[in-house]
Length: 335
Image (cartoon, rainbow, N blue to C red; front, side, top):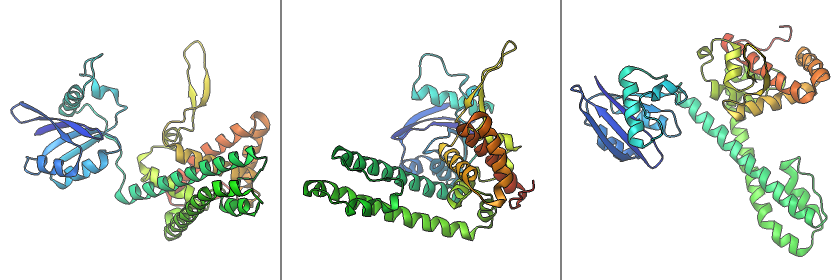
């Protein structure tokens, strides 16, 4: 067996390859498709260990197509770097440490999502970036207007442009804001088109429709959840999903005392934020299907405040969605 390791970076990456005789070859390559193809297309099948990162998936897929065995490893598994010297960190030392981990099987493989789910995640992330850009632009326009003693409510982004144009602004303000309003109008149209596309995709998926039967959960939340979780069977229980999403309380306890703090906020912040929004919708809603969950949340709100109640609702929703997804059942308000 030939073992190898890649210390992967955006511009260039460090490689370490160990052949059957134990000889180690080290080299550096640009992190580009052409360079990797030229370097590995004629090599014997090699087991290559690389850390999970932004570039790791396309590199792993490319190496698989060339007949090699890439392993994408979880960088949070500290034992993988056991042979790396402390105090001195270089790309070459990192690649050597990964090579040692590959040869001794001292790594924890990271979960690799299916191609369709990765593409869906990219769409969701793109929509999130557009919405954030729109929010920042609206805040900037409102700030300019406030400096002139004018106020425009920014809660409804879709109608913000028309509401600004309805105001009788001085000519200099109109000339100043018009380019921003045109850009904001274009952003609105792009966001609307993306959301229509995502909603059409949600309607075609029986899995998404099941998740959307949960009160407060819309198509964007259901799509983002499935794109992140992918296969629900990889989690042993609902608590594992809640930990994965960073919705469980942090804890610093010992034999002498016990202290539980705010939620860990580990994992994907986007899905966690969407579940919190769904928790607000459920807590403020009036649908009969969500009555039991809403009453449960209202009891927590009466004791500890609405903020903590909504986080508890998001934590509950994460477990409910996982159970529904695993058992392929729709929401049952009696459970």
